[in-house]
Amino acid sequence: MKSKSEAAVDKFLSGYNCAQAILYAFGPDLGLEGETALKVATGLGGGMGGRGEVCGAVTGGILALGLKYGRGEKEEKSVAQQAYQKTEELMAAFERAHGSCMCRALLCGCDLRTPEGMKRFREEDLHHKVCVGCVRTVGEILAGMLDEAADRAFPARKSL
Image (cartoon, rainbow, N blue to C red; front, side, top):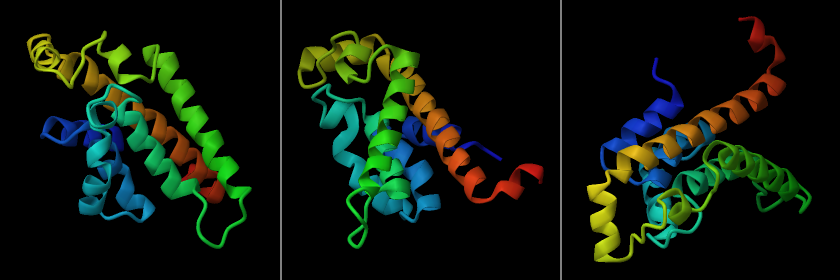
């Protein structure tokens, strides 16, 4: 059986952006239908609409964490603190692996909003050299975080 991380990489390589790939791979287990996941995450690719801000894989991961730990309408405000903590854990682990959460830093200053930046992105094959690794890393981190939550909820599962 394919891991969620590899499923996300496959979706990314099939033409979807990094945020879409992550949310598509993890969303269904968290109650979000795949097609909706793809639509919701569309604008987050390329560091939020190609702006080079926070990596789309990271923001897709944050959305998945929100599905698991987010505050709903009838929940206390304090519930949001767990989502913030999990977001910090994801971002810190990603930064340890890649040095930054910022798309433009990960792409060595490549500006995806310009024709020159897009040309450089293609010529240097940054899609494969950088972005695939980012999607894989977020997928692995997120899988670990969500498995930990499942293990706490169902302690007997470890013995299976």
